[in-house]
Amino acid sequence: MNMASSLKIEKADRLKELPPYLFVEIDRAKRQAREAGRNIIDLGIGDPDTPTLPHIIEAMKKAIADPANHRYAFDAGLPAFRNAVSEWFKRRFSVELDPKTEIYPLIGSKEGLAHLPLGIINPKDKVALTDPAYPAYQASIIFAGGRIIHIPLKESQDFLPDLKKIEELKDIKAMYVNYPNNPTAATATKEFYVELVRLAKEKGIILISDMAYSEIYFDGQKPISILEIEGAKDVAIEFHSLSKTYNMTGWRIGWACGNPDLIAILSTVKTNFDSGVFQAIQVAGIAALNTPDEEINDLRLMYEERRDCLINGLRSIGWKIPAPKAAFYIWGRIPKGFSDSIQTSKIFLEKADIVATPGVGFGKSGEGYIRMSITVSKDRLTEAVSRLSKIL
Image 1 (cartoon, rainbow, N blue to C red):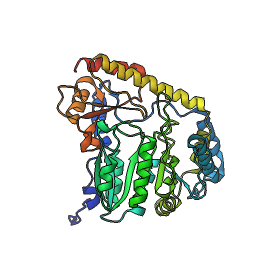
Image 2: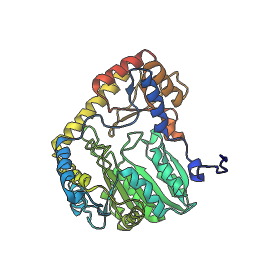
Image 3: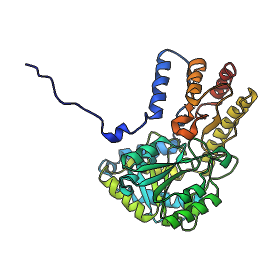
Image 4: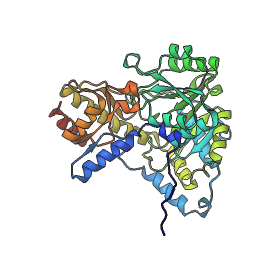
């Protein structure tokens, strides 16, 4: 005899607080369009379309064959990987990092950014979050029980937060910054970081810097690390990724660096959640960090050419968008005649078979903007402009 179950499965309250994850919704619409046989140009999610560099793959092949890498990884990572990070950081930013206490490997920087709040945020703690922002930040704060204080990013201020408004806030436990920025592609100045560090030290704010796009920059304008600022290590932890720089998004490897107390806290959280990064991937990561500069310059040049192709193409059909200084996103106001960012992205997909990301998906201050990725070939970008010319 079958008896009906009385069990009612419900989401936890923390899940109910989450808005729909933007990229899942976009992926669903994109998949449906492809299943219908449509020729989609995907300018949505930023996922490099060129393969991982061959010398990284070769290092991985050798590491996989080594039985020493088949067991649990060290939680703190291979000393050789942490040393490679330290040496890379010194070459790139002229900043000394202690491999033992100021660097910690991650299963992708997104994972580390999600776990850190569990170690520093108590229920109802206030966390300042720029708006628009990468959606994963909001979820990680909600999971930790924090209270989000949104800080608008305005085009008139080069998409940098107004530090005077932050100074007026009380009892802020932590603040997220992300430059080069996703979605706006804005970059931060040294003057901004100097003031931010001063303010953080004065008010006791933990600074969480996401620098996943540090090496995707244009016109020779290198983004700076917050850790270059005197005193930043007292208040800041920074997250880096091998995903964008070395076309390794699927490999899942990055690192956190900076304040040793924050690194220790993150380590404690992670020790209770995972068993470290697969060692063979760490070996591949070492090979990536030792990639000759000219190979990375070639990658930057490719993205710069794509940026110019799309920006100039859009301008030629009357849609004027500022050229980004970094990252591989084009962030612009929606074209005239369109009412909002969601409607714009829907029309792009329905009438031009182009996937673009509505700005409002990154926060209320993103309304009125659209984000397009340049992780497709120049030919596809030219085709996208041709298609848009027929509907704008």
